[in-house]
Length: 156
Image (cartoon, rainbow, N blue to C red; front, top):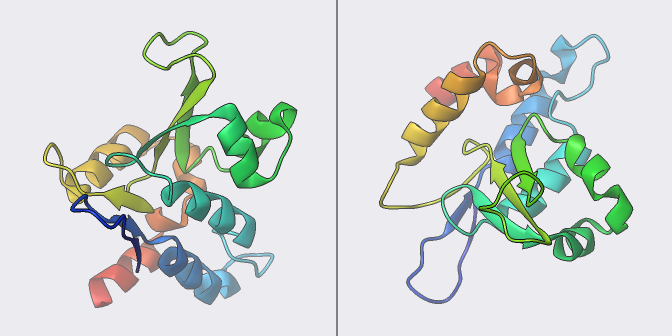
């Protein structure tokens, strides 16, 4: 588990992306293509985002900042985020007055990254995340939901 320290007394970021990616690679033999379900590209992108978490599993960042983080042009940021949209939710100021203009608000799946809060535990956030998405198509792409990973969690 990778954590990020800020030097002050603020909570550390828990980044479980590597743990989930490693388990996904281990179980890749179960896929038809013999590839990890949580791909290396997804791992790199979501891990970069997790390291930017401001509070709980929320990131508020400028479009320009996201482009610098991912090394892409501003015209391609939506396409870049769309590749991991089964692991995040994101919204802009278009249609949402709570997001400042020029910013993107990203909510990361709390199973992949979390920053401790007084409002909610990580376990509660994970339960809430999957309760909402439990029957959706996007949850089928998420390696965290597989029985193999859940069995691994129970074993460790």
